[in-house]
Amino acid sequence: MVNLILNGLANGILYGGGLALLAVGMNLIFGVLNVIHLAYGQCVMVALYAVYVFAVLLHIPIFISCLLAVAVSALLALLIHVSVVKPLLKAPLINQLLALAGVIIVLENLILATFGSDYVGLQISFPVFSIADIFVKVSSLIPFFVGIITLILIWMFLTRTYTGLAIKAVVQDREMADLVGVKTDRIYLLTFVIGGVLAGIVAACFAPIYTVHPHFGAGFTLTAFVIVVLGGLGNLVGGSVAAFLIGIVSQVAGVIFSSEIGEILVYTIFILFILFRPQGLLGVKVRT
Amino acid sequence: MKRLNRIALPATLGSLFLFLMVAPFFLPLYWIHIFILIFIWASIATAWSYMARFGVISLGHGAILGIGTYVTALLFNFFGISPLLGMIIGGVIAVVFFAGIGYFCFRFGVIGHYFAVTTLVQAMIVYLLIMYFRDFTGGSLGLTLNPRGTNPLFFQFEDKIYFYFISIVFLGLTFYVWKRIQKSKIQRAMAAIENDEAAAESIGIPIVKYKTIVTAISSFFTAIGGVIYAQYMMTLNPDVLSSVGASLDIAFKAILGGMYTLWGPFIGTTLIIGLEEYFRVVHGATLIGWSVAAYGVVIIVLVIFFPQGLHGTIKSVFGKRVQRTIK
Image (cartoon, rainbow over all chains, first blue to last red):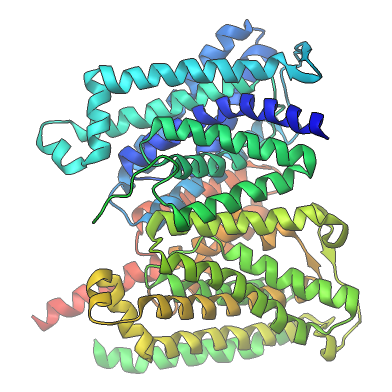
């Protein structure tokens, strides 16, 4: 039992790295555009299929396939932004959500129509090693380390470059940012595409672990949003802490009870947080 | 224009009503089936709009459907309790769950995006619960009701025509409730809330109470509508009755028709079920997946170009014309 929990803990921490990456994209898009990207999980799913197409069907080396998949994901984000999100930026919230739900329907069924509903995967097996009875898959180390490196890069981008600072400024106060000369339209587009790139990186990391099917992405969107709320809007550190917490909770509850209970637990934590601590884990309550 | 409306509107409605009353006696079975689906889902979409028209957007009505239908069906299958009683129990449990969490959300000021996602998460939780208790609920395979033939006491009828009239009466009931809310004190209070929540609260309007009441009414009728659907289909499918997709479908229907008008959700439902059936029947067999993707594109286009819904857009266009003639 203790062993199971320790295993769950280790896997949860590793899983959390990937989740943190997933949530950063969501966090940026929600913070900058004030849009919940409901189809985010589906974008990851499409990128996973892209990895599959390049690596398995076209026999391109895996590393280059992953880079190509990131590019595909960025293009997809660009397409979604121009055709769906941009016309609806000023629309009521429900219309934005429904249009993005429409994007879910389109993406899932286009994939279904082209690839069928079978599971596809890379068919690479990575070794498993154990440290004192805790079994760790090498494949789950990849999202962990790539996640942390990407997070550091994103953090540096947001704090060290002009564009990054402009993005942060729009999150804090879009009208003022507009007033001091930030091209908000361009920032919106850029943020959405960065979200797409991040989705692509997530997919590249998850490709060796998961086999995909057309309805694969749905859970990712909600998990990502749960992490955004738990971590606090615009808070990268909080988001990372929340991601590891969610990873650990879902994996440990998963090995003790079942994966459904793990997810239910995560969503219950989300509801409790949104009611009693809406500013997130590390957030500070702002007096209005 | 106005006089024309006074004669034309009742005349159209009257003939539509007459048509609907006699239609099931000569229409083919397939069409009766489509009509029943439209009536049931239109009443659910109308119930959804009770909340939505006051700015309380729920994306979690799947949770209500799931609780209402599964409680009713499990009570019937395992304890033999008639669905007529069961749907009241299921409806009340759904109300307690959904309006209960809703109460805390309103109490702690969870609004907008956050409220919408909270409701979405509730739909997800109910779906996962159905999956977890798959020994009783059948999980993703669905749950089939024990057949009892045609037995009004157990709310089972073999002939579609019974459900045709049951669903049309239920639709009428949801319309009646819509009108009642429209005339009540709640409507004016909620309109004030929608305009300026802080100002409304400062003059002493009990926001939390009214929002909770509207949510409870909406949940109850949604649950009953779900049970009628389950009794009609005789089988419960978690993807249709509790998933995130189911919740979004209800919102789609109301939004596309126009969620601020009485007929909006009905028009939206007719449109969506019509589109779905068209793509399924005409292109479904040859273009698996493509037809649904095309349906998704149509939805996106409608949302972008008719932000107020079809009925809402038509109404506002006509409204402008009337105003112009007055000037």
